Image 1 (tube, helix red, strand yellow):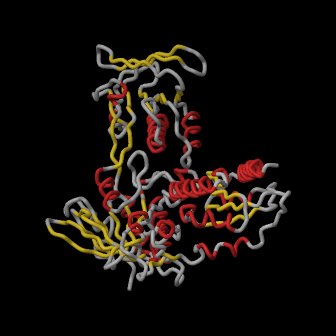
Image 2 (cartoon, one colour; image 1 turned 30 degrees about the vertical axis):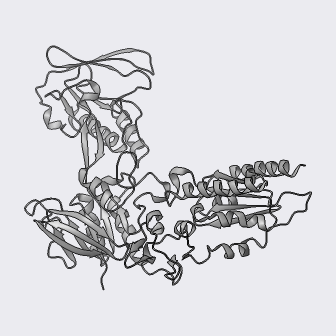
Image 3 (tube, helix red, strand yellow; image 1 turned 120 degrees about the vertical axis):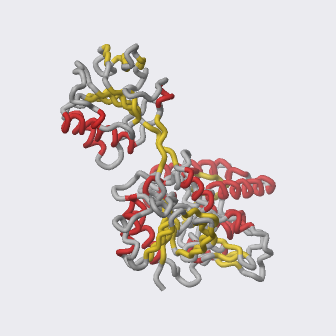
Amino acid sequence: MTARACIFGDTDCGRQTARHLLDAGVDVLLVSRRNPAAAAQPAALPADRAGFELLPGGRLGACRGAAGAFTLSLESGGRTVIRTADAVVVAESEERLALHPAYGLHPSPRVVSLSAFSPAMLSPAAEPAEGPQVVFLNGLAGESHPCIAAETLHAALRLRNEHGIKAAILTGNLKVAADGLEALSREARAAGVLIFKFAAARPEIRTEADGKIGLNFIDEVTGDSCRMTPQWLVVDEQIVPSAAARDLARLLSIETDAGGFVQGDNVHRLPVATNRRGIVAAGASRSIGADPAAEAANAVLEVLSALDPAPGDRAAIDPGRCIRCLTCLRVCPHYAVVLETRPVVAPAACERCGICAAECPRGAIRIPGLAAEELPAERASAPASGKNGAPRLTAFCCSRSAGIAARAAGALDRAGLSIVEVPCAGSLSAEMLLAPFARGEEGVLVMTCHADNCHSREGRGFAARRTEQAAGFLRQCGAGAERVKLVALAANMGREFAESVAEFRRTLLTLRGT
């Protein structure tokens, strides 16, 4: 059976993603919020192309299932339509808010937003000006967005090169980290576009009696006092997620970032992945990457190629031990646990993070290679140490962060140190953390990702709670709660890994009384 992807968003990015997937032999359902007359026309995306279906005026009502088996309840034309899909792409457009109020300005024929500005507004008969005829504001009322910075630079450069019009950009923190922006800013300067950067005070902006805008400021580079009275003032905009994108994030159980955009701020998911395998963020949801549509299509194809995981490789729930408490359903950050007559794991959606197994009160969930009794085999080759030598300790390391840092810690003294990598520190139960002490070891390090960069979102939080439980048990036993410690590391922190181990060894030696 041919795989199918459902794309939400009749946008340029959504249509381009659809073309990529159709070319790769994947059927596509494009859900458009537009009515039939305004939805994608055959010229943009052939409606009669095999494997393509357009659902105009469509809205998502509910989503069930997981990667490879999503069931979507869609509202269209006053009726409910049920469709299935192997993968889902969110490609809705963004919305823009002009920042006039932030500058104490009101829209007028001379004060326009970036989206509304066009060189056609400039008449050849416009009165000459000694200074720039057009001034752009960028990032003075808040953080500059790379997309807004790019549009501002392009507009100013086009005015200068194509129309011979003087332009200036008054900017705060000019964001040029996106692809090609640094080169674009240099090109604009070389063409004669004036760029003034403000790190301290903002320029004074006032409306003159004739409706013109006056700007007074001190050039922070030269210290000169500057005055401009441009014929047009172009105000920057804030990019915000659309209501449709916010609704999709809620209905699809997708993490959002601090601004509400689809896809949380997590380095492990850039540029298009979400917390749910099989659901991809594209277009305005992320402005990172040279070709969002191609990246989204490639991510879908990768999901489709991995729909059949290795047999027995993912989490499985023992029906004989499961009491249907639904703890696994509540804690799974990837929504891989689905409720049928009882909770079951959708193998294609499982990320093997182990959080469900660690949290299950009945021990009903097993993940091959992550059971407590399977971990000691990974530590059999750990260097031994005598009573007066280096303390024996175990470092449980997240494979995406501390595990990589451990391999990069070239100057690390490994005497008495056992390093055990786990897919996520959230997979560590209190039993696992206490097991090394039963074998005569003196300490345990729990080494996790930083809070905002955990691939499983809450893995570090679960690990912190389990570490506190283990520390409480050791305190009650009189062994010392300091023998178990939580440390956050990134993958590139090899030196910090070695320093953390050395510091922990000193703590253990103090507890030993030497």
